[in-house]
Amino acid sequence: MNNGDRRPPMPDRDGGMERMQEVYGFNVDPVSMEGDFLAYTVDHLFGDVWSRPVLSVGERRLVTIGVLAAQGQIDLIDVQFSAALANGELTEEQIREMVLHLAHYAGWAIGAKVNNVAEAAIARHNK
Image (cartoon, rainbow, N blue to C red; front, side, top):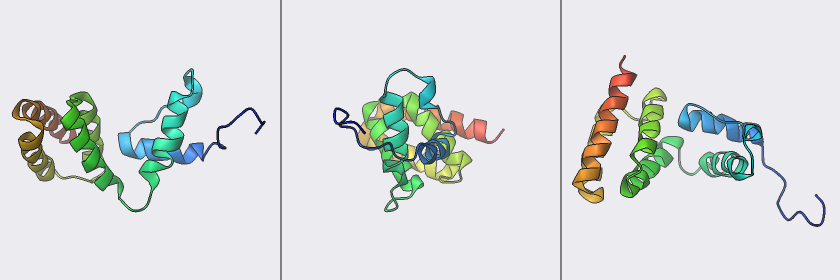
């Protein structure tokens, strides 16, 4: 590292790519994108934060779904539900229960949208 570069050494890129694949069911190689945003996402968010041992991927996914619902980020919830079903982290019954619970905290309109996304993810999973 030269004196003008204040960034720490890059973490294990392969580990971040593997965790991104596990969390989302796909990954994107930062080399294919301009700028540093995706590289930091893969290296830090997936290589470090999602890989910490205190919470499981499934527990982190529950937190993430709650935050996304509160923000109305319905499209991103679809990715989370689909991956949770594919990885066996959540059952259909747990997802439906989660939607009912979220609706009372995030609002009924958001709950209805999350429910539609949940049912679509469940239907795709059962094909």
